[in-house]
Amino acid sequence: AQSVSQHNHHVILSEAASLELGCNYSYGGTVNLFWYVQYPGQHLQLLLKYFSGDPLVKGIKGFEAEFIKSKFSFNLRKPSVQWSDTAEYFCAVSYRGGTSYGKLTFGQGTILTVHP
Amino acid sequence: DGGITQSPKYLFRKEGQNVTLSCEQNLNHDAMYWYRQDPGQGLRLIYYSQIVNDFQKGDIAEGYSVSREKKESFPLTVTSAQKNPTAFYLCASSISLGQSQVPQHFGDGTRLSIL
Image (cartoon, rainbow over all chains, first blue to last red; front, side, top):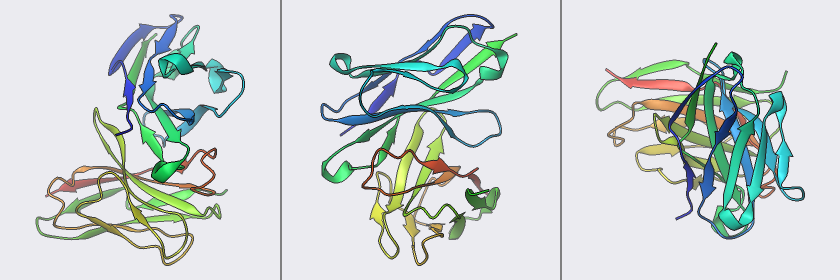
């Protein structure tokens, strides 16, 4: 079965620290990749997405992610986090082809807590 | 503003009771989805619908039912057969299931608890 794995359940950082959240997926075919964020009390929203082309994708609020096909990874990064980045982050994969066409498979989520 | 409206925000179910969660969208999206969110497990797909009067089971459909009589509405019924219904339920929509490049828009969710 197709799956998405996020390496860390809870990450705690101080402001200005660098962030990297890991995401790996199990499918070897063509995929679209997404990172979503859920701030406390808010609905899930798209942070960034990769469909094709440049594997380094830049999203909102200074976040970026790099698609490494050989490693089946799509790690999320931010050079310097802020207190307002405290949220839960979800990696998601959309597989192209077969019966899974278009559906999103989500990772378990990583809670990021940033201390001022 | 276009968006997805889920109601109610909080819902309580008695043992043996069916409850229905509402999801309405005014984005003119073709595809709609129901996800269940549990702590430490991320989001899991319950049902999805590509067009009106058509829907497919997701990964955890047992104990749930849906209908899609109108493009803008995709209600989810949690039946008494669902033995562990306490969770956060999210509704989502996208332009087309076939156009997998389109990310999904999400509602604010309904939190269901058992009395």
